[in-house]
Length: 187
Image 1: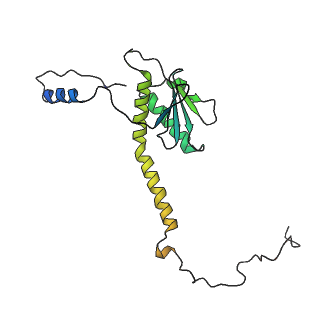
Image 2: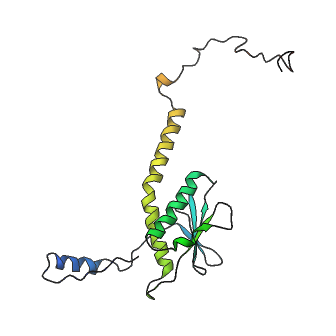
Image 3: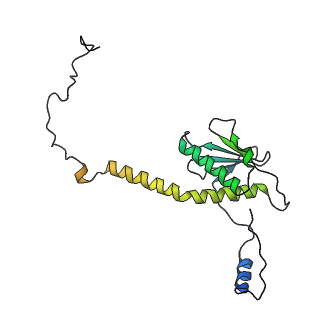
């Protein structure tokens, strides 16, 4: 949704600075998304870590698909995305439902009341803002995953055993590798 414009009279403090700022800023925000256009004109956005987002401008639908596999985290992300769009007034809350493809969720967005506003651009801008809000979570999860990998691959000296300290024995444990089949009385 575009911001609400407020007229400021010249008597107000900072009115000149505000007018200069509005003159230098572009009227349409510039966004950058990793997106593709399909052969039938749908826009696929692949920026999110958990889901892919498809915007069908012809039927005015937004469809989300899991990136790899379905999980509770992916469903929560899909739910959070559509709740975000509903709270911003971009989609009709009653249109959110499961899609035709397994683990997909979709919703419809309405026609614009004002003809100068492109609904597809509003959806793209809202999607961009949602992804930007989620980006710190992506970075934190990636950092934690990398730290955990480093912990297992490069353990500290107190978490590791130097090679050769474990004495070797011909047989270890309680199960002999030479006994096969069932013994009497076990089952």
